[in-house]
Image 1 (cartoon, rainbow, N blue to C red):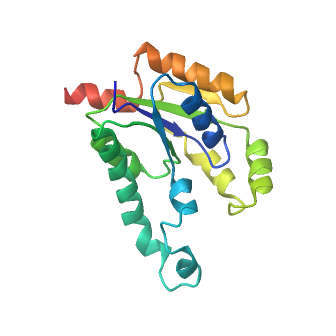
Image 2: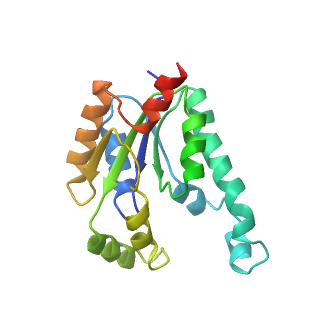
Length: 184
C-alpha cells in the first residue's frame, strides 16, 4: 500500500509535529513526515532577504504553497506514504488539495488544543509570531469534515495509535473521501 496520505490539520502549536513523529515511529509502513516547517528550517526560502524586504512574502506566498501542495501529490504518485502537517487556512488551499489528491487514499485528521495551551506553547517555542495560534484556533477547523479528531493535549503515543487504528480500518468519511467517491 503505497501513496497513502495522512493529513494532520490543526492550529500552530497544537502538536502536529509531535503526533506526526509518533505516527511515523509506530506505522507498519514507511511514511515521510512533510511540513512547511521542514522547508523553512531547511532554508528553502530566501528568508533573510524576505526579512530585509528585498522580496515580499506576499508575492512569494501563493507560488510557495502551490508548489508545496503539488509536491505532496508528486511524492504520493512516486509511491511514497506521507504524513503531512498543515494549517489549511484558506478555502483555496482546501479546494486545491482536494483536486490534487483525488487519486489517493487521504486520511484527514483534525488536531485540537485549548486556546490557553496553544498560547502557552507558542510563547515557549519563541519561533512563531505571537497571536498565530489564536488566529488559527478560531479559523482552521471551521467547516472541516475529518476522518478523526484528536486532542493535541493528550498523550502523543496514544493519539498516534488511535489515528493509525482508524486509518487501518479503511473507513473514510472526511471531505477528501467525499471528493474521491464523487470522482469515481
